[in-house]
Amino acid sequence: MIRSAVTLSLVAEAAGGPFVFWHDVDEAIRTSCELGFDAIEVFPPDAETVRALQLPSRLSGLKVAAVGTGAGWVKHKLLLCDPDSTQRKKAINFVASIMQVATDLGASAIVGSMQGRSTPSLPKAEARKLLRDSLEQLNQVAGQLGRALFYEPLNRYETDQATTLAQGAELVHGLSATKILADWFHMNIEEADMVASIRQHASQIGHVHFADSNRQAIGRGHLDWLPLVQALQASGYEGYLSAEVFSLPSAREAAQQTIDSFGRIGTLSSRRS
Ligand code: LER
Ligand code: MN
Picture 1 (tube, rainbow, N blue to C red):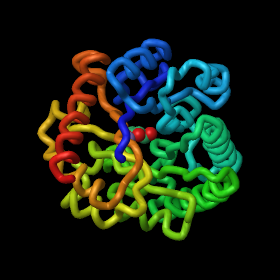
Picture 2: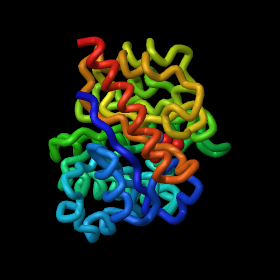
Picture 3: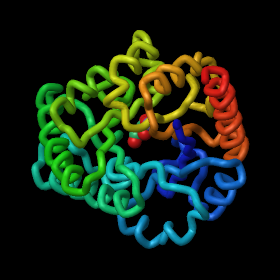
Picture 4: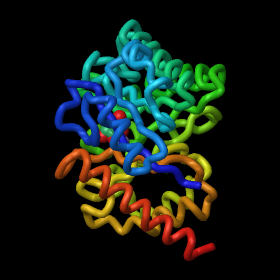
């Protein structure tokens, strides 16, 4: 069964980013429960903040779909490809600390923006080597925690480490506790054929960011998205489709539009069964 999730950002520095709910944990939980979501995905400033929220006593039956680490970059300026080994170690420790709190909540952590990119003084091959080395260390942590790490290819304007599922799969090749995150906004920019790419890498996909072509809620753009869901269903995908989309026209309407799209998936499944 594919499960539904919606995002909540607690990071002031991520203002303007693609998250449905902002700052108000109780509002996010209340609205998500009311609309019938299975889970929320949390984008926190750090691990300590997640712990202090005491989510298990507040979730009202919701699960935590995943915990993002992007604040490691947008707030703390930490990158997993930093050529300065002290800074890179801090980046690895930051991700590991989020992996620990995520595990305590029954969820995985996501590496997206913290992967960084090449710069005039950091050639692409070197940036990729440093990222791979960091991911190898984090893969070990994931193995010890017994909880997969999600690595997310991003579009070319955000990274040049891996921009397609194929490049992502190559980057994490052999890291058995690391799965790929398929973000449909990035895929719509970078993939030649989104359905074929999902089919080809289905066994490695651990999480999906469920976004339309304009990064609004599914149904508010022009993505031909039902075939993507069918490709995941055919592969036996049992993870989340998590709405990492702009809070447009409002948080509630973005969440409502998302859950309405899940209604269409329901129709699809019952038609097929
Ligand atoms: C960034 O564009 C993104 O998609 C996030 O999920 C990465 O942290
Ligand atoms: Mn994403």
